[in-house]
Image (cartoon, rainbow over all chains, first blue to last red; front, side):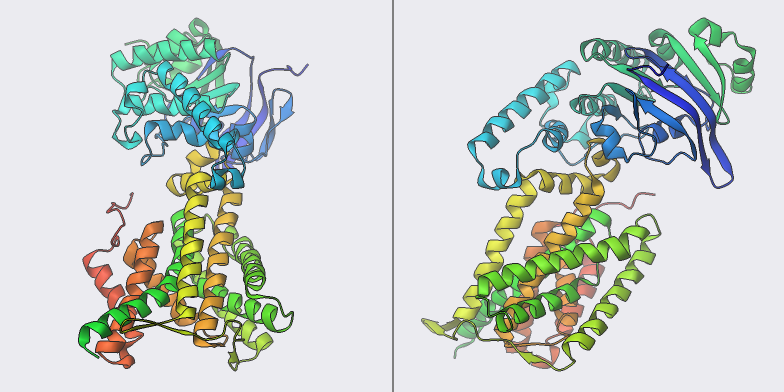
Length: 261
Length: 295
């Protein structure tokens, strides 16, 4: 029954004191899918991502990824297991150059020994060259190669978002979680981002699961959508199905269902 | 002696002593850089290091270098132990809680050391025969040279570890952004443990060097150098590794100059005068980056 590939969440609940941030959430994402997670502010979307990546501990439920239980695993383990993510508020190494931001990820996962680093053995130089080559390949993909020596903190906002995605790709993830990737982007940048997400999804054979408020992006990209409200799953299905679901319209009422304007 | 010979002489003495302050300051600054904690138990690790060296030299009759390595290893284990037992459970508590715990850990180690090793001082074995070296009008001792040399060697080693190894790069990543480091598959707990281990090992080496320099060790020897090294770290810019080295050398020199040209009564007061001045004039330290607290 359990899919060999993909993500399966069963009865996930996360509680902060008396507040049920996520209650009894079940969802399944097949390998290669592009799935959206939407909901009004405070619906618990980011908490779902935090639980999936080990940043907060679920109170109950299971998270199965690629047939392995990752429910209570620490974030660095989940990351090595092939689940990468970006944050709603950008978490780059701001004082490092664009290139070094990617190199850190490479070094942690495909590295040489302590002694090799200190003694600068030939292998070190070979690996170093390989790491730079790989990093530049990914930077090319997100069009940041020309900025590779710029400090990450000095990049334009949209480019910082792209760099965060690029850095996530270094981990060679199978599942990429994007938390509001288009937040703060102008319509032009958003269109570029949609293209970029499609591109990386294909070329890296990724499963993409994203949280987004920009409905044009969600409707454009995602084949299926989950809708969360007050921690509860209130709807799921294809774009049109969700769009016309009365419960979804009700949840968004008062802040205007964003696709109706 | 003419005044400038005294000046040069005291600067040299200051650099020798300062190199040990720098070694201790590195531990403060690395730990602060990574978990934003002033590890007040750090001076006690330095004291323990001196005692471990003492026992290795006297009871086990080891030569100096193996004794120093063993002492550094034991200190590293204790440093990691303190982090694991006292600080890790408070990782997400308000910073003041961890700070108070650090002071508690410091007092605890002092008292336990007093109980186990005795309160009176012990003469440190003279493993290296005292020699005076004259260069023109300036006098050096071979112990000063060893102190300075070993300290510099360890600093170079630290530099290589931090900049060229996987764990060193992980340390820098964690100090910049812990969450982002986790995303890169970095085991943050392991990196923090490693940081405590390295800092403690450096402090232990400092303890042995000072034990040899002053010929004596006692359970309270960690208090003053610990505080001075802390000031050195703040002076250089806490969290900045080269800052700790610079601060250490400056503190050692300042102390010697005050003794030479002022009064030895003010030997320890200098450190606190410097601390007050830094906090008033340049709270981020000499090499520290000015930054706004995030709200």
